[in-house]
Amino acid sequence: MLCTYEYTSEVVDKRLELQRDILFVTHIHKVF
Image (cartoon, rainbow, N blue to C red; front, top):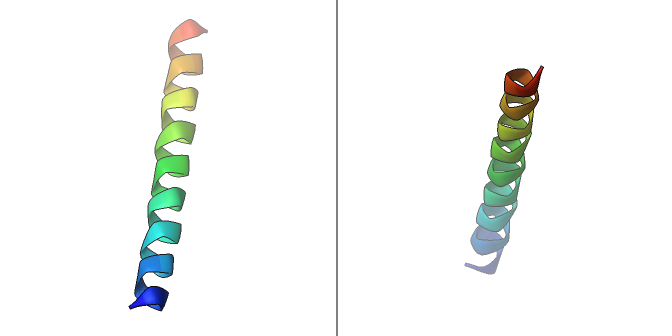
């Protein structure tokens, strides 16, 4: 159970990072 939870939170972190990168990139794209 603990291992699954750790794995899930890690995946969620990566997804959030990815979304942030995408938002950042699209924002820059709109600005320039």
